Amino acid sequence: MLSTLLLLGATAASLSAHARAVTLDLTVKNAVISPDGFSRSSVLAGGVFPGPAIRGNKGDRFKINVIDRLTDSTMLRSTSIHWHGIFQHKTNWADGAAFVTQCPIAANDSFLYDFSIPEQAGTFWYHSHLSTQYCDGLRGPFIVYDPNDPHKNLYDVDDESTILTLSDWYHAPAKQSSTTGVPLTPYSTLINGKGRYTESPANTSLAVINVKKGLRYRFRIISMSCDPNFTFSIDKHNMTIIEADGENTAPLTVDQLQIFAGQRYSVVINANQPVGNYWIRANPDARGFPGFDGGRNSAIFRYAGAPNADPSTSSSAINPLKESNLHALSNPAAPGKPFVGGADVVLLLQMSVDFNAVPFPVFQMNNVSYVPPNVPALLQILSGAQTAQDLLPHGSYYELPRNKVVELTIPGTPFELGGPHPFHLHGHAFSVIRSADSNTYNFHNPVRRDTVDTGFGDGNTTIRFVTDNAGPWFLHCHIDWHLELGLAVVFAEDIPNTKAENPTPGKQL
Image (cartoon, rainbow, N blue to C red; front, side):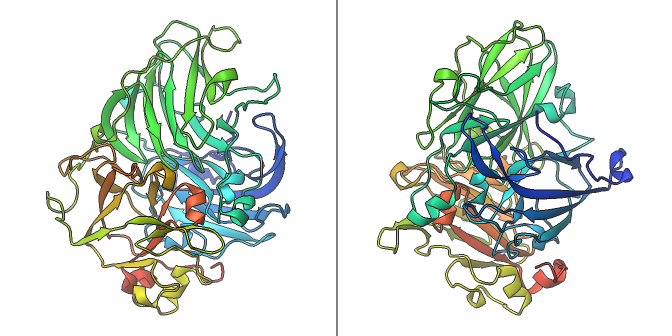
C-alpha cells in the first residue's frame, strides 16, 4: 500500500474540513530496493517507492521541506522536486524545474517549497526535475481533493487505496544514458511499486487492489513513466473517465485507455462482477517490454472473498479511449476564436534530430537543442533580463505577452525518431483543440489537460492557453531521456511583471 504524508507534520488546521496548511519534511535518500525481484540502489522520497502520497484539499497551503541526504555517487546527488500539474500561480520559484526556476538542491542541503493551491483539485504527482534522476526512483503521487467535487455522486470510495501509480523500472543508474545518449530500456512495469520481469524470482509479489462487490471506486491512475506509454485496462470492467490531468471531464465510459508519461486519469469503476480475481494490465509500448507472461506488466484486482491467487481472466477490451472524445466538464470552449489561427500568438514547434551533434545526436525544437543554462531562467529575469533575447543560452526561450491567447502546434514524430512524444507544459492547463488521434479541430468543448501526446509522423497536436501566469515555464517532452537530449523550450511569460508577481525567497534560489 502507498505510504502517505497527508498527516505527517500537518498543522492542526490542516486536519479540519477547512484545512489551510500542510507542513512536512520530505527526505530524499538512497536505499537498495527490489520491487521486481532485482536489487538496486535507488533515489527515493521518504525511503520508499513510489514516494509517499502527499494529500490535501483544494485551497490548502503546502510547505514541503525537501531535505537532500543522497550519498550514492553512481547517481546524481543533487536534486529538485517538480509538483507536476500544480500551476504555481505567483510562486513560479517553487515549480522545481532545475535551471529554469531554481538551482538544484545540493547534497546535505534543503529547500522549502511553499505554495498554495487555491483553485485546483485532482490527480497530480511529484518527481525529480534534475536531468534523468526520476528514472532512478524519485517519483510519488500528489492528490488534491475537492470537498465540492461535481462528480462525487458517481463514486463511493476515493482514498489512498484507490491511487494507482504506473512506472517503468530500470536495473541500471540513469546516469549511464547521459554518457552514451542512448535511453536505457526498462526491465519491468511497476504498479503501486510492485512488478515482475522475465527473470523475477518465483515469490516476487504483485500489487493487489482490494474492492468490495457493489461499491463504486474512483481510481486515480498516474503515469510516472520515464519513457513508455501504457495501455491500461482491468479485465471484465468498464471505466468511466471523470478527470484528465487535474481537469474535470464529462463522464466517458471506456474499457481501455492509453496513458502517456506524465498523464493522469480518474476513472470510476463499479465492482459489479462476480467475486474473484481479475488482471489489471498496464502494457508498455515497444520501448518497454510488452506482454503478460508470468504476471508481467500486471497487478491483481481482488474482490473481498476471492482466493489469494493470481487471476485466470483474459482481456476483452473493445472500447478504447480516443482522446478527442474527452470534453471539459465546465467552461469547455477553447480560448480565442473558433478557427485555426484564431489566437493572439500562433506558434509552430517543429521537432527534429541533429545526427551530427557531438558526442551523440540530440533533439531540437525549431532547430535548437535545449541546453540547461548555468544560471536559472528565473534568476536571469530577476537580475534584469527583459526579453527572450536577453536569456541565455539563445534560441530556446519564447517570450509571451501578458493575458494573450496562445495557439501552439506540435507535429508528430515517427517512432524511429522517438515518437510519440508526450509534451508537458508547466504553469498551465491547455485546451487540446486538435488531438494526435484526430484530423479535426474542436473549439467548442475540447479536453483540458497539461500533458498531451503529439502522435506519430502523421499526427499533429494543437493546443491553446492563456498567458495569465507570469514567469518562465518549461515545455518539454516527458520522456526523460528525450528531455535530457534537448527536447524542450522555455516560455518566458510576462517578463516585465515576473518579479513583482513572484516574490521569491532569494537566499534559497
